[in-house]
Length: 160
Image 1 (tube, helix red, strand yellow):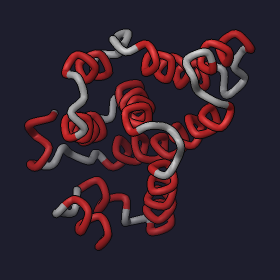
Image 2 (cartoon, helix red, strand yellow):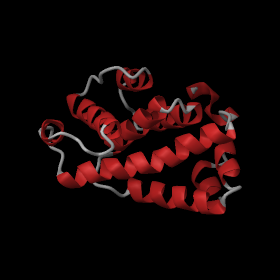
Image 3 (cartoon, one colour):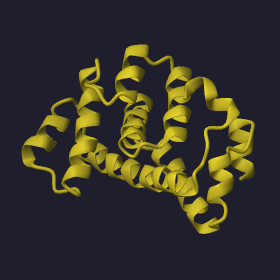
Image 4 (cartoon, helix red, strand yellow):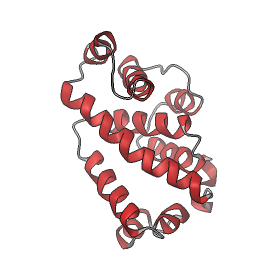
């Protein structure tokens, strides 16, 4: 939890609530750190995360990752499209969003056409597996936040 405080400047309520299961908190933090080291570009990673957050209706994740996208100077139209589950204005990021949804819808049994569509935007087989890592990581986060009723912290209200 100290690393989270050092990174964000405060302890988010969802992290504190997740700490009631130290193994779950540790797993999420380790997986999140691993996901950040993938070869996916930051905007592609955030596309996976916000796709998961909106799909699972996790208000805290939506706010937190809207802030992250804002910090990355992401196009406001991209942020709005992600938040409203609409097609993205950037085709390469739309490919990530659609692939993420396809992996979820098929429990990983994506069709060759769906994989080819993803790869056709310059992504790799490694990136496809990195999307799976992001899905797993943010399944933990979004479901735990909903299960514990984690609120949107004051520091994120502007992005809620």
